[in-house]
Image 1 (cartoon, rainbow, N blue to C red):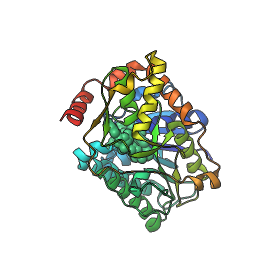
Image 2 (cartoon, protein in one colour):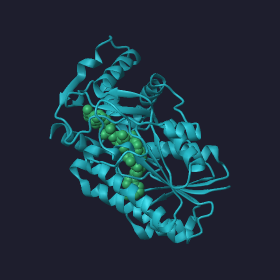
Image 3 (cartoon, rainbow, N blue to C red):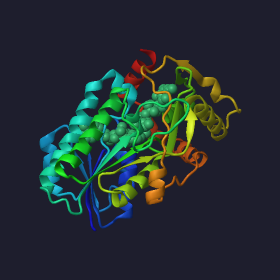
Image 4 (tube, rainbow, N blue to C red):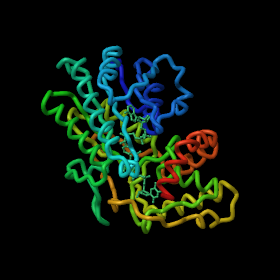
Length: 350
Ligand code: NAD
Ligand code: DAU
């Protein structure tokens, strides 16, 4: 079938990779990127594909129900892939309401708009909600999150994502809307905004600035290369079961301190620095309040049902990521000027 897809948050980190994947793989689809271009949205992320005839852009804030309805009326989408969100945990601790607005209200506005244009004719339609493993809370040193793990969010960010997940399921159970959901672990890769651990450290290593490690650095995350997430979304959108959710992860757990040391090692080699030079930049700083100890995804369902598995090893993915940032220092300098400096000073010196 020939889809018309609304992809929200397509100018952001993961969204831009999803847009690129689908625009190039499905030239007969119409792909509409709906994004408000917040500090995290950047049309530069799509400059290699924005000339393609099947790509369209609409600058719309999903909190604005009328604007959302207008864009649904205009394009009459057969599918929605919803990624737009406030996505940074530390910002959610500083300003929870912004997360309620975009992540909860924005999601409900999209569900309402889809319901309005689909008018109960759900044949060939699908609403794909992109969520996070953080809704499941924190693990101890053992165990994994499965699709059946009870929700237990701790941060304002994860609470807002959990709430949006519940609304998406409620529209399936109440109105019969064909929904599907993915809950993914930590992504990394090109275009990652440098407020998150890996790109922040890459930026600071290049500039010989301190690498801030929260608490004792023993917190553990499961890292997935962003293009593998984009491919998982494509697969689940097209082949997943109606009403189901799929966990997506990298089978790749790292403590923050070990990850940053690995990054320092690879960056020293790329920058021609003496081994051990960048590690000296590591600085332990005040912990994140309510910091979840460990996330780890059991991604066996998507592997067994749909045959998905990460295509690159962490070593390959990290090397590609570092190369991208080194080759795109203009991108990095652009996004770290202006408001980023204010955020950075407040977060790390305030
Ligand atoms: P991001 O912060 O890089 O990008 C978010 C995008 O959404 C930006 O383009 C921004 O302009 C847009 N946006 C924000 N508020 C908006 C609004 N009110 N209206 C319209 N557009 C708005 O986020 P990301 O890291 O790419 O994450 C994308 C999605 O994936 C989010 O839903 C996030 O919860 C989820 N997710 C992220 C990760 C990760 O590791 N980054 C992992 C799992 C799930
Ligand atoms: O698990 C999926 C989630 O991964 C996504 O839903 C979120 O959108 C995404 O931001 C990410 O959340 P995290 O909080 O895990 O990512 P972040 O890069 O902010 O932090 C990763 C780990 O590194 C975490 O334990 C906090 C720590 N950290 C982070 C920063 C920014 C530091 O030690 N120092 C830092 O300066």
